[in-house]
Image 1 (tube, rainbow, N blue to C red):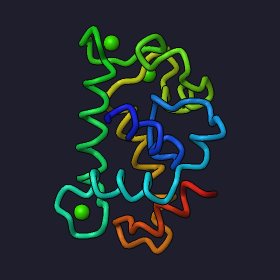
Image 2: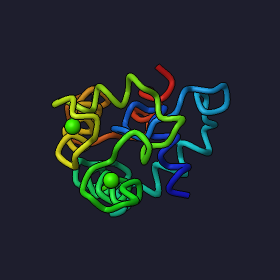
Image 3: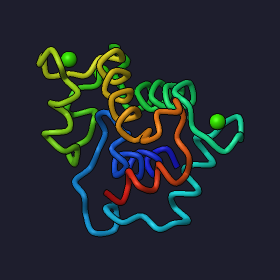
Image 4: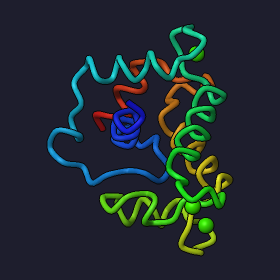
Length: 133
Ligand SMILES: [Ca+2]
Ligand SMILES: [Ca+2]
Ligand SMILES: [Ca+2]
């Protein structure tokens, strides 16, 4: 389930580090997939995803990915399928691993770019648009 969230948010440009190459299926998640992930991320169920909800998700996913619990996600932990460019984009200090701060920063950049109307939260339309772009 977490992996699934990862793949779809990665397609949305919302996953900081554990993205996968865009295979045919993952590049085009169904409407149901998007709705499922949206509802799962919208923890206060107000129909919008705000930064707090996104960041909660980042932290949970980060801890899940950091299997040796050293506070960093390296390439091996991100998974062999992790897209190289996505990983190095997130690794802003280029030390070969992603810190929580880097993961959060990357996610916030993606969040802002998906938040087309600048409302500070993402509607399902905005998430869908980000995934389909
Ligand atoms: Ca919400
Ligand atoms: Ca680690
Ligand atoms: Ca780094």
